[in-house]
Amino acid sequence: MKINLEIEFILNENIKITKKHIMLLKQIEIDKSISKAAKNIGISYKNAWDSLDEINKASKMPLCLNNSRKQGSVLSEFAKEILNKYDEFCIFKNKLNDDFNLKTSAQNKLKAQIKEIKNNKNYINLVCQIEQDLINVNISINALKDLDLKVFDEIYLIFKINFIELEQDGENGFYAIIKEINEVDDFVYFTLEFNKQYLKALAHKKKLNKTYFVNDKILFQIPAKKIIVSL
Image (tube, rainbow, N blue to C red):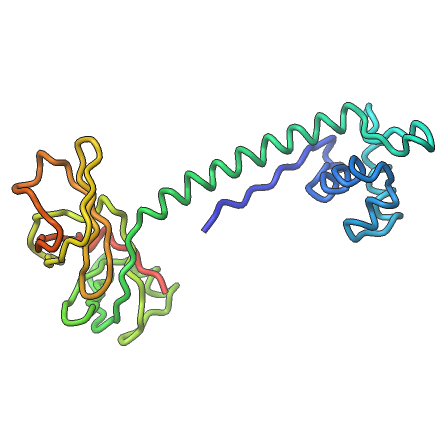
């Protein structure tokens, strides 16, 4: 999953400099020729010329300068500033995606099968099976309709790393085998094996009742309302 944003430079309500124009300008900067640039990005010369001409007429400053046959088509300072701003935006967008992917990668995903669908007053309770264990999931009525969920459907249960409550019992309380332990500052990060699937969990050192080692069993709980369902 990623964030997809595009930038437009608006000259007036009818004229915009879009990604298509940016790609053309970047190619002109390389080829020093509108016709060569158009060919290299797969558009007609007329399309390229008309696009630039429309923008030039709406702008106080042109995008391209035809200085001489030797120099060819040269971008104006105005066009170069637009390209710089576009590149800055792309760096910002990439950082957003990096941050977003970092957060989503911290989510856990378990494969399960729906065994029962219960209608409650304000929500739907799914009883799901993972190997021999049953896990309850609460979703909205709209989510049930949108996903068109039925008994025996195979689904994924998704939840964040900090939604696993270690050393807690009750609904959705299970045991897992610790496969890996990493301590970072005041936190302990666990890799857990649960019914042949792997989970990530974390806890504050001071809140754990004991010291754990690899291959130990640990009790954990996942609140039904904090699980997201995906196909």
